[in-house]
Length: 78
Image: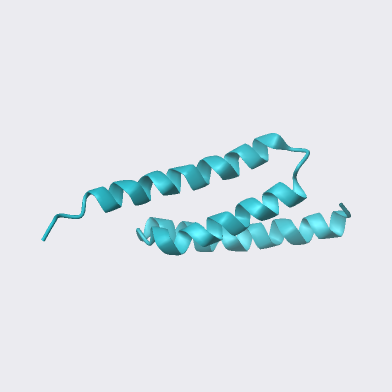
């Protein structure tokens, strides 16, 4: 992959990361999920030779799913 393209992807990742973290910090996990998936897709495509970067992205998404599940299980029945 050309260096300029990877730099563009890195810039996009940083932008998405800020948005993802803001949603996650506010407990808006449903809004964070598609952003996390997009980030992972960029990482998989751009950094395929760096499995640790991909693993980190997968781990972040897994943590988000755990928070969503916990939030859903804590909702009291009416």
